[in-house]
Image 1 (spheres, rainbow, N blue to C red):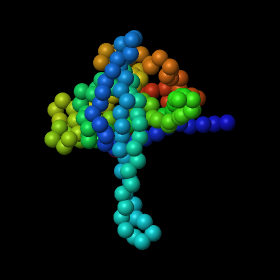
Image 2 (cartoon, rainbow, N blue to C red; image 1 turned 45 degrees about the vertical axis):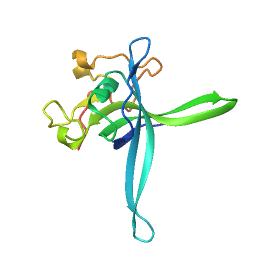
Image 3 (tube, rainbow, N blue to C red; image 1 turned 120 degrees about the vertical axis):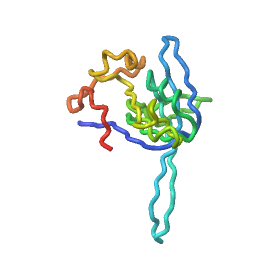
Length: 165
């Protein structure tokens, strides 16, 4: 049976990023993202609906986000869904979240979004380096301990950091 697990989100951070490091020096951040949807209801009135999404970001991507983004900043996230399950007070609990594999900063310096060093084009960071960036130490990072990545037969092996908009 074939499957495909891909999530693409464009939204605003709901809180400042709290970067932390694991014992193996891997950076990790759990962020909240608010994604707005505006549509017309049956009466023809515009309504806004907000969806709040929890996202986990690893490695250099987490470090870049904590350096350039703060509460309210717009950000583009691409990743995959993961179901976390745990037990608390004898009750089983679970939560669906997104594991960020790629992100792109949106907007310029004067717009609340944090663009590149010149304030122009957005910067991007990949949670796993593409072959072109393997030589660039800024993007070298290990995969998260339990999040090893192996591209499937129908998935590209990397390299495509260009977002078509």
